[in-house]
Length: 120
Image 1 (cartoon, rainbow, N blue to C red):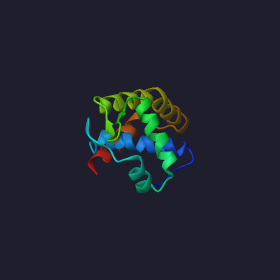
Image 2: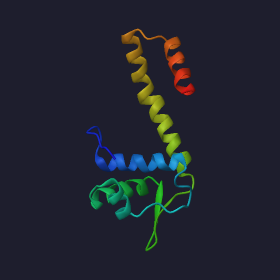
Image 3: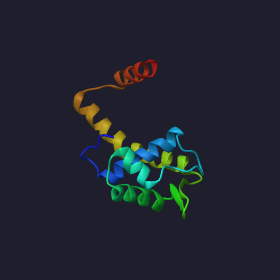
């Protein structure tokens, strides 16, 4: 995984796990890789992966079965999607609209680009 400087690495790891949950890689109540396995996969320090797992557990996305491992919480996929949808509508979209106004980009151009992206 290539990390960027915009967010802390543990947040980027948590986001990746959320992406995998949304994509269906890990279903509800299914086991996810151990902290060590995920740290090795992403080539990060185990402590960084622990922080990511702790963050997701705190948010109720995953839970720990002591001695067995971490599992995806029931309703995690919907919770992640709702949270991201809200963030998109409240933060991302207003920034896009601002840029569109500054650059003179109309909704017709955006609609055309959206349709083209769906065809490819």
